[in-house]
Length: 516
Image (cartoon, rainbow, N blue to C red; front, side, top):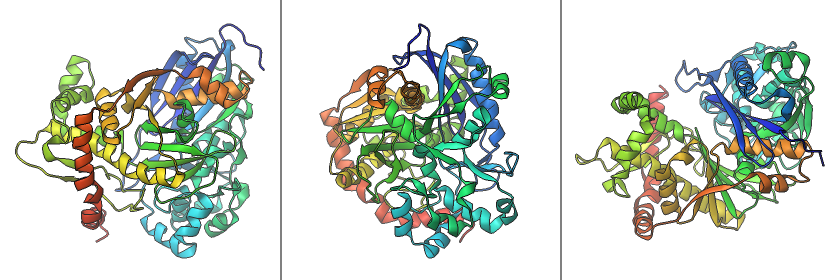
C-alpha cells in the first residue's frame, strides 16, 4: 500500500466529445477542484463529425493549469484519463496528426458498413469485436480512409485513440488501456489482442496500433516538456484509465450485474458487468475496467445532445431569458415540462436523431414524433424527448437483462443529465425501479480517480477504491400512478412504434443525405 500524505490528491481527466474536464479528488472521493475547456466539433459536411486533436491537448493543458492554481502540483499523487471512445487520429512518424480526427458520432461510412459486412460478415465482426457492425466502430471509418484517403493511411505511423494520443503528449508512450482501445473494433475482444482478421481487411499492421495496457497500470510519467506545458510536476505518475463508458460504470459504483450504470451524457449509455464474454443484439460488449470482466453496454447515440439541439433550434426565447436570469435554458424548459402530465397528453418521441444501434442496427434511422395536436406546447415536446429516451432505455434494457440472465435491481445514473430531477423521476417511473444519483455528477472523472488511486497503490483493489470513494446523493422511487401510465404507453405504442414506421424513417434519413 502507498504511504498516504496529508493533502494527497488524484487528478482525473474526462476528455469528452464537446469538452475536457479536469477534476481533483482526495482519496475519499471528495471533489477538491475542477476545471473545463471546450473544443468544437466540425460538422462541415452532412453526417461528418471531426475535431483537431491538438485541441484535445490544448484543452487538457488549460484544464490542468486551472486546477494547479488551486491544488499544488507537489500534492498530485497520480493522474488518469477517461476519454471519448471510437474517436481516432492518424499520426505520422513524428506523432503529428495527418488529418482531423474522426469522431464516434460521424456517419460518413454508411457504404463501408455494407462493404465490411460483405467482406467479413456482420456476425463474425460482432463475435470477434463484441460490437455491432454499424457506423460507430472505428474500423468502419478506417475502411473509409483506406478507400478515400489511401495515401494518408500509407503514411500513418500510429493510429491513436484519444487516450493514447494524450498519453503520448504526457509521457511519450503511445499506449491505450484495453478497456478503451477495444472501442476501435480492431481487437479480438475475448483474447484482448489486436485482430489479424480485422486489420488484414483494412490493410493495417498491428505495429500501427497502440500498445495495450491494463486499466490501473502505470503508462509512464510526465515528461519535462509536458510538465512545462501543463504545470504538473515532472515524474508525476500517469495511470491507465479507460474509455469513458467503462470508467463511468466504475465511478457510479456499478460493479456487477445487479446495478445498471446509466450515463445521461452526449450519448446515453447503460450497462452491467459480466464475468463471461457475451454478445447480443441488445448491447455491445466492451472490456471492463475491473480485472476479468466485460461491460455489456447499450448506447443511444443521441442523448443530451438531442436536448442541446432542441434548445439551440427551437427554444431561442428561453435561451435569451435564461441568459438574462443567469440560469440554464434547460432549467426553464424543465419548469414547463413539469406542468405536463406523464405521457405528454399523447405525444411520443422516438429519439433516433443519429440512427439507432441497439437492437435494430440501423444507422439510417431518424427520430419520430407522433401524436401532435393543437394543445401541445414546447414543454410537451421537451418532456417527450426525456420520456422517449427513458422508453428507449426500457426497450433495450429488457433484452440486455434477458441475455445476461439478470434484471438489475437498481439504476445508478450520472453524467450531466443526472442533475435533472425531472429526468431521474421519469426514468424511475418508466423502468419501475429506484434511480440513485451520486454526490457528484462527474462520475466518469470519479471512476478515473478510483483507477488512479488503485494504480498508485492507495487501495488493494478497484472494488476497495470504489467503496471508499463513492457516495450516493438522492434516491428516486417509482410513483405507482405514473408507472401505470408509462406501462400503458410503452406496451401499446412505444414498443411497436419503430417496427411499424422505422422503414419510412429510414427513407427520410436517406433522402436528407442525398442517398435516394
